[in-house]
Image (cartoon, rainbow, N blue to C red; front, side, top):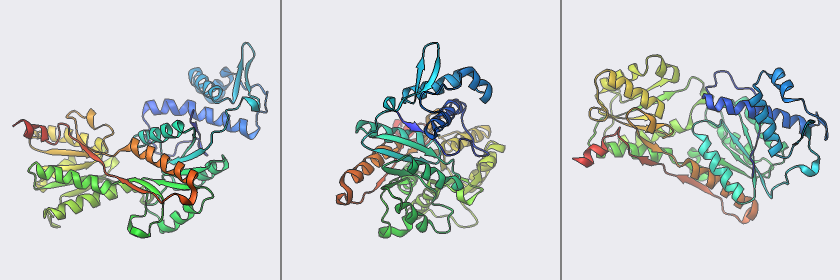
Length: 394
């Protein structure tokens, strides 16, 4: 079934970084969403003629192609009907798409990089079972999160799959309690209260990022490395702290301790810099820190930073993987690096499928359904940057 997408606020937050292709998609989708909200709110009554494509193009500054795509999207959803030579009109209620058995609300921080494959898994599973999806995003802006959830509830969803903000809060447990008290069943995706252990009563589907980082360090250790560094991307704002990164650091620390490879305060192996700092000198400073530590291998969060590090190493005459072995975390674009990156690869599509399945089971079975708390351990995809292929060929 077609996915219905919208947001309570159509503007992008300051500093948002979106690839050109994503921008093009968002332009027509945002216009479609604005028109859809106007139709549902009664701004244009049934049978009313909508502005022409040319008028909307002039009013919005968008191209005719973008406006045309927005109209086509509304037609496909049964909200608008086109009459040859007359224009586009608001469809009568009987033309609207029939409501699925269940409508599932999905809240994501964004729809870029990590989450498209997750969303695809959710959508495919729901569609296969006759359910539909209503999407809202909050662009990692905590102040917009409640409005986005309320938008989904107002849309009449039967259940929610949420990726909420839990890091950087004074009382994340209270925040989770608020979410669990919502009037429809809730499944958390890539979020849980790890510190509570068995006290965590949330229903959730998460990647075991600690396990993924742990396995990466063990992989490098098996290849003969004894000084293994960790390079991460620091966050300037507490509420934008990345929960995945925190888990990666914890997994790395556990592996280093288990292997007896702990470094002292005078010779650290773990380094972090903000995203702008990674960019300003193309990772030269981070490479210098890593080289100064004596590390022969490193786990890098994420793919982009690892690719930048490859470039910095090459400029210093350091060969990857012969002189420096690298494993990146995320596997979004690891295969596109100049030296394809071995990467820790979370099962994003499977996460979406399982979150959708858990929520549908909850809606179907009610209290008879057991509480699902699922963790999927990422796998390591071996490419060229870690040196495993070289060892295998010896």
